[in-house]
Image 1 (cartoon, helix red, strand yellow):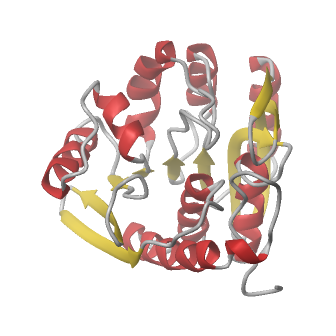
Image 2: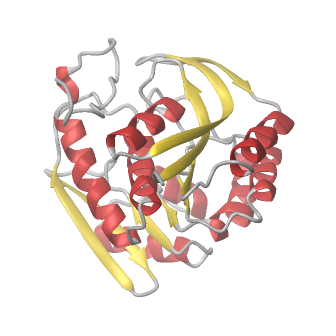
Length: 265
C-alpha cells in the first residue's frame, strides 16, 4: 500500500503555496496526495487579489469522502480562515487516529492576512491539542501567544515551550524570519529539543516555504517515520528546494521553491 497524505488547505492559483505546494511536496517524497480545498485564492508571486471561502458543508463533504474510502496515513492542515471552519474541520477529524501536522497559516508572503484575529481562539482550542506537530514561524508564534515577536534563541525556545503546553506533541519553531547568516529551527517536545541549522540563502524566491515544510513533515510521518526523523528530512529537503528556487524564475515577485530539484532542472 502506498503511503498517503491529505492536505486540508487553500488553493494558490500561482501554484507556489497552499494545496498546490502540498501536493508537489507529497509527490517529491513519494507519497500519494489527497486534498480538501478550504478556499480559492486569486494570487500570484506578487499579491493575493481575492479569496473565496468554500462553504463549510462542502469542506466537510470533501473530508468525509476521502476518509471514508482512502487510508490516510497523515494529515496536514493549512489555511482555514474562519472560526466556524476550524470547528468544522476539527469535528470531521474526531475519529481520525493518525498524525496531524498543523501549519498556522496567518499571512501570505505578499502580506495579505489569511487568518483573522477572531479565528485564533478556535485554532488554539480545537486544533493545537490535535496536532502531532505545530509549525509556526516567528510572527505566527507571537500571535498564537498574544506576545511580542522574539528573535533571541532562548526567548524563541521559551515561546515554543509555551505553545507545547497548549497541547501539540511537538512544536517546530521556524527561524526563517530571523536574522543572521544561519537559519535555525527548534523542534521542541516534552522529552527536550533538537536544533536544525542551515546557511541562510539570499533569495526572494521563498513563496510556499511554510506550506512545503509542513507537508514534507506530513509525508515523512505518513511513511511511518518519527517526528524527529520527519522534521530532519523535511528540513534538509527544503533547504535544497530553496537553493534551487532561482533556477525556476517564476513570476516577478516572491517566486516558489523548486519542489522537484531532484527530478528536473
